Image 1 (cartoon, one colour):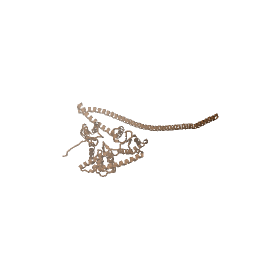
Image 2 (cartoon, helix red, strand yellow; image 1 turned 30 degrees about the vertical axis):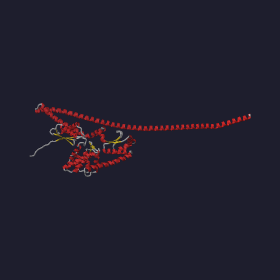
Image 3 (cartoon, rainbow, N blue to C red; image 1 turned 90 degrees about the vertical axis):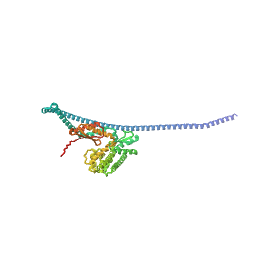
Image 4 (cartoon, one colour; image 1 turned 120 degrees about the vertical axis):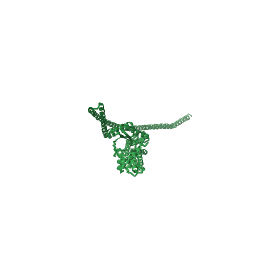
Length: 518
């Protein structure tokens, strides 16, 4: 029994050991798998951490490179801006230095003129002293010879001295005026150039600029181009100045030539609309617009000739007529004014019984000298006469163009008719932004000023108030006094009236001798 029991016990124990051994093997496998999985997970996490650190390092290095590149670009832009600013400052400094030099030269000139005037004043004082000595001697001689009282002799002598002084003053004034006229042209150019540099009024802005609207600053940058190459190419091709930053939302084109300014405006609008802005495209567009403008000028000139029913003219004259369409005088379009003068000429010629076609031709061509550029000097009437003569116009028409402002004598009725028609068209109410009342008032004031001087017999305002013709009494005003009278009237007109352009003062002194044969 005990043996069986022991055997049973060993069997049970052996069985239990087998059971536990069979249970521990899978458990150990599970634990080993978990350990391997955790090891792999830690390895994966470590690899991911290393990859993340590498990506962060690469991103940081790339960011540092971008920052360095941005700093270099910003430094280059800052250096460009600094160099451009320094260049502009140097240009302005040079301009200021030139103006200072001009002022110094002007001051020296004024100083020399002052010294010259002081010398003339000393000479005048010496002459005055000599005159006083001679007067004393003359007084004594008159008292001894004429046996006049001292008061009577003094009165006669003072009258003689007064006449002599007036004569000397008139001669001196005439001499000074002749010297002034000799140097007036050069001084006038200098004064006008300084005035243009310093004057920035609305009139100059409106008559010498054209504005093109743009949207956004991005278009401004494209117009300027890299380092300003586009804007330089545009200015070189058109001959106008382009102002980018002066007016917000717009580009200002500045130039005195209206045809070039119109070409620049049209070309700029086309470039902005197209969007392709570079030097080659700019030259292409400007060339095309210039070609179209030439055709428009020729077509406009031919239309003016055909509108008046005139025979064909030389093509160069037709082109100059077309250019008048883009020019204005006191807000009046010159081509419209010329057509109006031609129509008035035709009406007056028909009334007088002279050839209507020649009259209209002279009226249409009378202001053609205003179409040429500043490179041709002289009065526009004489310049226009030279042009029409060069292209084969008849002599009566040439003389009518030259004499319509009095620069040349009229040799036929056409010159007189052109002067009259020009004055009528210019003085028409509203033609030059001037009402009838203003015009009449100005003419009345001109004549009133002329009549206010002693010795003036009659006074007439001519050429739509651009000339004052003064008739003087020859017994009261001598030839020397006439020069002083003209100057005094001109000064009073300058002080008392406001008027466009200039007013010519002409003194007429005439002695008429009448006798009858019986």
